[in-house]
Length: 127
Length: 237
Image (cartoon, rainbow over all chains, first blue to last red; front, side, top):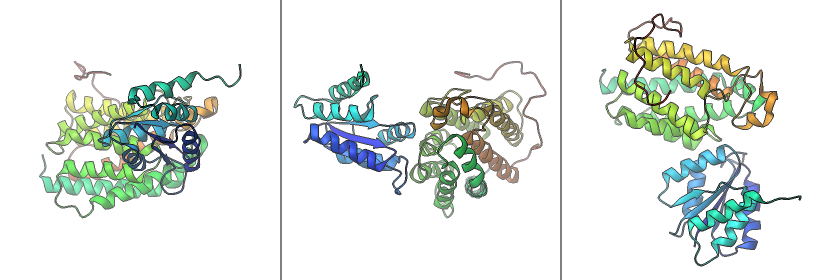
């Protein structure tokens, strides 16, 4: 199964998003990587790397990110990992929910999960 | 080229000098960052470079290239936020240019690789009010001073450091287009960029340490007294 990693500056936000996504795609491996590792706000490449390794079942990992350094640290973590991991260019919460649903699809690939996550960019809240 | 043991000593001295300087400037950098960012730049960098200096202090075995790589890898682990990948990741990646140790030629290659990695990782171009605004004039001046003007490496580094200072001043009147500061929009105008500032501080310390090992003029202006007959061989400006 494709694994998912949620990278947020906030540990609580990463945990909460995984909790929400787990309701949708209960079986998918979901790993939060939030905070700077010392209980503060921030992101940490080593922490993200560990989450990618934990989420990877051999078929690849899609990484959801929030702002700025989350993207850079996720890129760096991906460069240093052996796993096939890709960052989704998607809103972190909606993207994680979409990705979790697709990840439970038996035929899911990194590309299909990525595509579903990125579809979340067009969600309207008020029409 | 100086021998490997001397290069190792110079790299460790530079790491130590940068760590001390950033500790001294911690409050200054954090104040700059609290105006337009998340107020962690000073403490993050000071902690990271202290750990990096400690990681290499007793290392008498590694090659100069390995030492520089260790500094980068340690920064990635110890510096939170965007500075870890930008400073540490770029040092780690640029260390690939130091196969033959520290020479005038490899220093130019390192500087160019570092700048390219920072621009690529941060997705930042010149004028976005980032460290790229200090680095770009510094790297261009360094390359031109070595390759066109054929100045001694120490003099080239002195010119590059003066160029970085100009870059820092250039960030003040700009509107931020990257990072947390970009959320402030017009409110970022009038503030000096913390990343450009720390980049300049680091270069000042590199220059100070290089002055102990190399010959050349250090009291120089960033602008060249000569007009080059040809431009340096560059893939992109």
